[in-house]
Length: 194
Image (cartoon, rainbow, N blue to C red; front, side):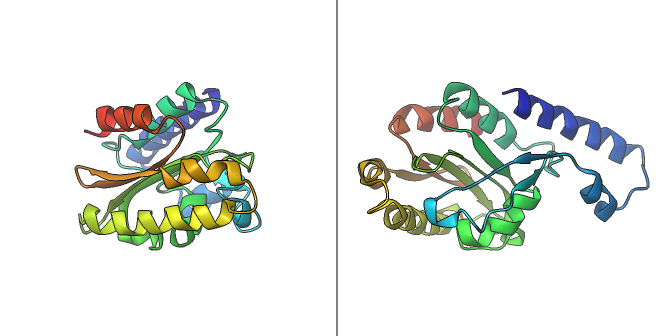
């Protein structure tokens, strides 16, 4: 929670500095960003996710996803220990692998997950740039199947949770929830994004 609060404060400061015309190019900002550790989203993806993620997230001010990520991390601190938001280096680097699209195909997005491995829980939210959230749900269904394959034989106790995973739309967002508490998380998602 403290990390997420720090990220949000950093975002506010960044936006304030951007409004003042700091003169820094985006590549200079990338080099000076503090980072936090983000590891894996699935057991098989361990080596391919970046260990650094930006604490400065270039999101539109209207995005509700940082608030959603903060709420879920606060409600499930033992489960949701990692996240990546649209605009961060880790999100952009892994977007194609996670969501079968380029970051430029989205206008906003996030994933919150367990860093520890062995826990399949995740909440993914993507806003397609073309507004076709229904089309993006097909990709999230495919992601759910990939997660099933990743955990099959690795941690089979997680398979029922993945099978029961929820994929739905809220406005122009497509959402995937894999959790033992999926109904409560869906309620939170709808309250914040609705």
